[in-house]
Image 1: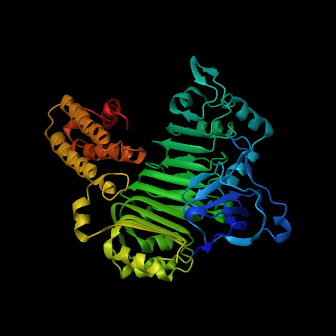
Image 2: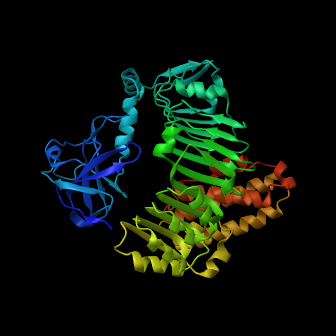
Image 3: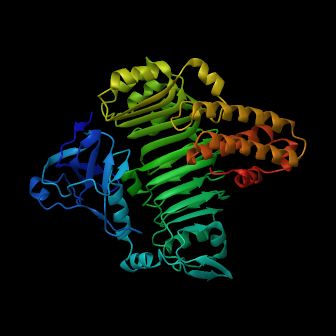
Length: 502
């Protein structure tokens, strides 16, 4: 359970990535919200009274920032239970001016980014800030690219050979490429701030990223048998199709500090992935159809956060969650297969501070609402479903719109009808022109809905619409002769050309 926020109160919190404590000071608690500022403290222990008098605001300087204070407002008046009260001290900042709203308390993200920034050489930092607002161009094999490009895309990547350098693009922070080649590893090493990688269709049995400095890695593991991670890995996302055993190799550093793991696989098979010299401290499973809690407990006994999103999915052996003794946060979204009696196992988790349940069995949600109110730092329970809902929505890609505060219910009903009608039309199409016209009409319907219901389609809703078309393609076209008429990418291009204001 949280603790009451006190104006002037200094609170420390542990940052696992850095193995150090950071600190914030509460400015005020007006209007059922709390304003706080991050302090310039990063130490091996909680700041003592003798240290408090010297504390000042923390200023961000990394990347495009220019000496910016980190001041935030959160819509609650209690401090998380894992924050440690260090004492009351005169305010280092007196008001909410230029404070940003956030929906979660900081866990030290600003310190982490600043530390990573400072690991680069002084020349690299100067070059980044010199070119970040520069609109000049660099010529690579006859093609012009902005010299302040932030992403190494596939077009640019293909132009480099084995011994090339990325130093002419000092602002690169990410790469989004297709196909793994040994030159990738060498290229990344020449770019001091390139820390995030998305790798599609590697078409290689071994993907070796050691020594690259990457801390955020998302990779398709279709056909991959070995994945070797660098010491800096903070978050790993694996997706695609896993048909054979995959071994993910870490190192002593990752075994000590741990990483955040996101899994989104077709025909997910948990035992098929082996982790060597690596500890998972957070586990996020997406698009699950069936998941065994016992396997999770056996394979990831030290996780502190567990989030599972179904499509929708069924969870079995939920009582085995009691073996996750370090669990602090749990979230189930579109996950079923348990009831109010089963969910009582959460009461055995002494470290549990956050519970999020969205689209779950009605009696399980009611039990959690009743028995954890005022007990945890965060309690979020909504969209409780009856037994009939699951059978009606098992193949409904827009089910998250049912009960969403961002989507009017009438818009959801009409969108679902559009999806069902489009499925019929695609099954009846006789040529590529019919498919293209059906895709256009599908998109026009959402144009009309968005206009009628005050432009409710945001980023998440747009992704849902495109995923819905992807599901229609898989069901109605893929694996049939129609697959030769048109690709899913071509349909998505048609939708992109047709959609308006979303």
